[in-house]
Length: 173
Image (cartoon, rainbow, N blue to C red; front, side, top):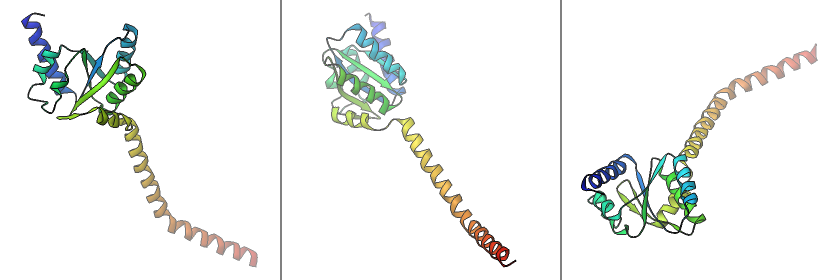
C-alpha cells in the first residue's frame, strides 16, 4: 500500500466507525475461503460489513475514539464487523465463532464504550430489533384491546339486562 491508499483506508475506517453504532473485533486463522464467504453472506443478511484490517492502520483510525483497551486488541489477523443492528451483528459473529474454531470474537466498540467478549455474547443473546419491535407492538395492541373491552363492558351488561327482561316478558305472555 502506498501513502495515499493508507490514508484512504484510515479515512474509510473512521467513516465506518462513525456511520455504524457497533464494531465487533474478530480474529481468524485457519478458515477456508468457503467458510469466510459463508460468514460474509450472513453479515450482509443483517445489513453489516466485514472488513479485514491492517492492525497498524486500524489503531491509527481508532486512536482517540476507543481508549479502554480496544486499540490494544489489534494483534494478529484481525477483522472488523460494522453493523447498524448491534444485536444482529453481535449474534452473527458469536454464532459463527461457536461453529468455527478458527474464528474468535475479541471485543466490540459500541457507542463509545468497549465491550469485552462476555458483554458481546450477552448482547448477542438479546432478541433482535425486529423481535423487540413486534413484542412492543403486541403489548400496545393488547392494551388497546383491553381498553376497548373495558369501555364496552357497561353497554354489554345493559344489553344482557334488557335481553333478560325481554325473555321474562316473553314467558309471561
